[in-house]
Length: 123
Image (cartoon, rainbow, N blue to C red; front, side, top):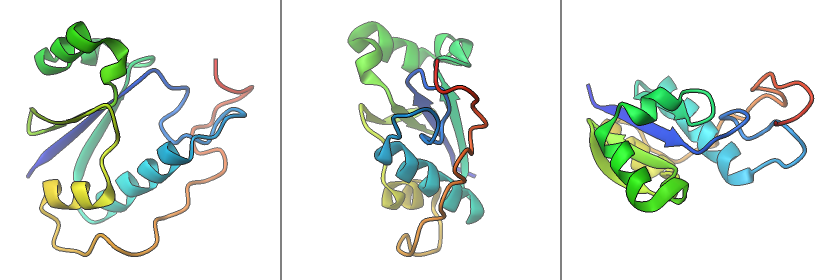
């Protein structure tokens, strides 16, 4: 099975719905990831603030960070190969890369209001 890895910048939470500044792009991407997972995609996300060793131990990601700094993030790998840097993939991208036999159209699931379980906002 195809493995998709997304290396996020330092975030309070991956859902985008914690703190006072909700990032609609991140909320949409989180919903797309959940949708793809529900259809069988293997997607793993890494947060620079919470999992820095995953970034340091991956040669592709380490190289991107050395060359471009944190501005390279988010970075997406498919089976270890760089496919996208500097922006989040679309639902169509996830569908294609995962080889899903479903249409990428349709409503995205709505994330819970406090899906990240943050308290007191982002640090």
